Image (tube, rainbow, N blue to C red; front, side):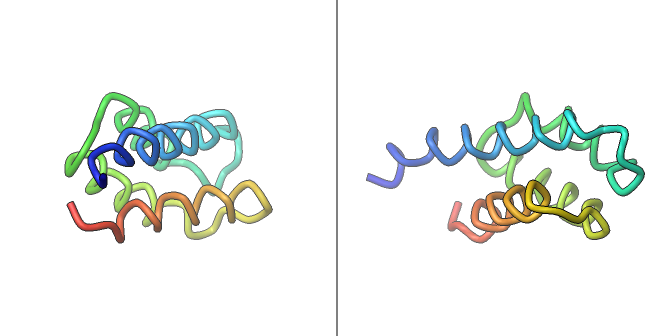
Length: 81
């Protein structure tokens, strides 16, 4: 059952990474944008580790979108892989 859920959560993660890229002009997202771009081509454990890099680089990003993105990435990185 968990394997069936994996693609859905990865889709949510990829959509969150796209939101970071869409907000690339915000100074708080400097390095996170490149990490997000790289993450779009990743899955599984590789994507989980990339999300940790992204999370470390969006700590100063504020707002509702930031909160939503942070929640999705944290949920994904806390899952067992």
